[in-house]
Image (cartoon, rainbow, N blue to C red; front, side, top):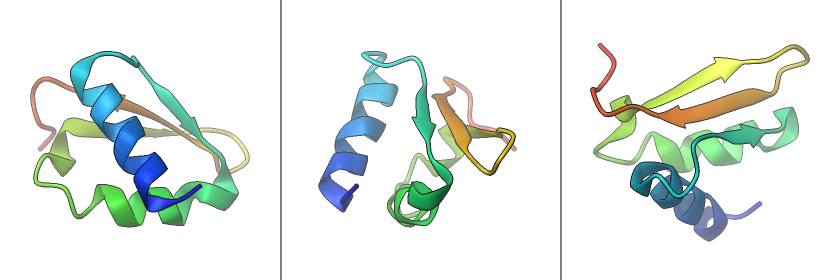
Length: 64
């Protein structure tokens, strides 16, 4: 997983092309580093899964 791949996934989540994206534990830090730099960071919700994986979704309303 590289930065450009993460950017593409985040844009697809934002546009609705993807409803959710599953990030494996070993890719989490790479994914998060790109995610937290975005202005719309608070629109993304990460749901922790068993084993350290995370399921990401895009929300219309930013989380608090």
